[in-house]
Image (cartoon, rainbow, N blue to C red):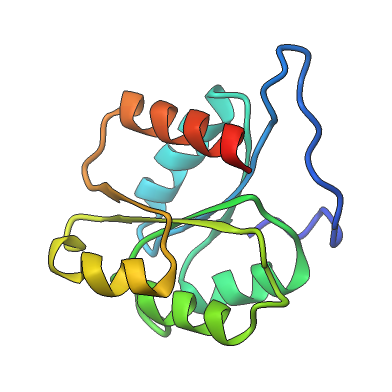
Length: 142
């Protein structure tokens, strides 16, 4: 997890093309998946910080500001669903955060995730274009 940047409340400004650069928190307990997602996000011109499980995600969200969280559901210590519930119980922590669940197993949980306020579900494995489209959509909505 990258703790080099201090807490920030400023909105990320648009780049020269007018597209806002997003700050993402990538949460997955599998290091190789985190690394792939972080590289993809960086290649798309956005910034990414990693968290290796739900507990680390909560710590990162409490310490810094993010526009989007890419969140796995199945993790040790604190599941993705528990992270979303924690955020709903602490709305002051990240009131404008967009939550994207990235999971191969989210299908049957979609109604519950939607009720919790999850913005989108990205199935694993996903194609780069799916991430591009999702981030483009979120960068214009946020």
